[in-house]
Length: 371
Image (cartoon, rainbow, N blue to C red; front, side, top):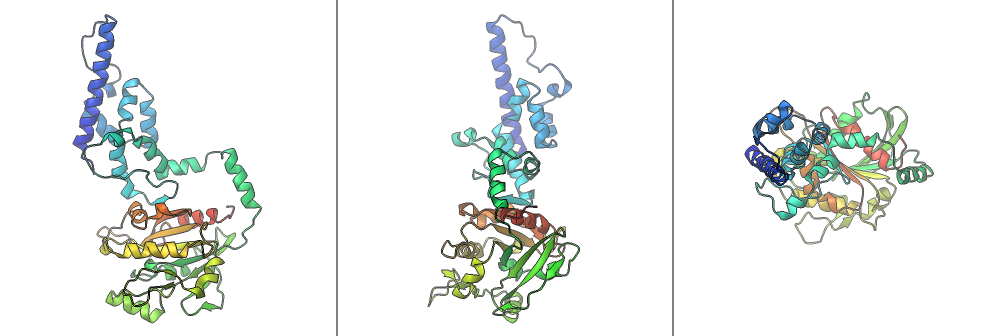
């Protein structure tokens, strides 16, 4: 995280350059200048420290409006160090990130910006990926090409899309996400429970979204219930029966999808990966294994290369003494930026299902359902 003193120092240098330039211009024009202080409204007369403090309380939209009030404020608001500070400060707090809003630059807390970083438009990057700005753009009129895309999607009706749900967050948390979903009709009413199970590992359940859109979730667990519960209690790492692994190897890195699930995955319209976002897991090799599982599931050989994938960044419950791994970090650990598929990471809580409907809404939209 950039320190406030670094940002204030950068803003102060912008202020000094601004007045040096103005003084030189006035000297060339033989204009007498009695003071280097900013004249005009009281906000301009405040110290740089106070100006920066005020800017930290403004929304991105208000900051842009402030930058349009004068040449001085345009220079201050466009400072790349300022917007890098905002990015580092706010990204861990954002509850979602997707393939269109993932940061284009590697952000670190370094106090010094090299030449390439100084040329990078951190302000534009912040406005592009900030959830508040994304929500505002969503309600703006669509561009012509988007309308054409929407028209062609409407020609392929999706009566009841099917999604395969898998991932360690289904099995490692204290509270079962799927059990909570099934017992929360006020959030997602159950529309039907098919009788057929998939070899004892998972089954499909139909839900109704906004009382009008039906969709099916096929829950694919790594093993049977007895093995899963034992692994959770004893903190064991088991190989998932969904995948094929290298023979005579202790590695849990999957090579391909188990053939018995090929037809199941080919019939899906999208995927839901439940990630364990509790900070207790730390930075372990599990991320590499989970990233490989996602890529195997989306293998072009299986025919799922264009299907959207929703990553539920899930914790058991939200409490003051329990924290979650930021969704931006989850996206980075799972290397989602390298996927050709549309993807989204959404913060979710197993106990209350907070954030679930936002993720379902995104998944249905990217599966061709007109909401």
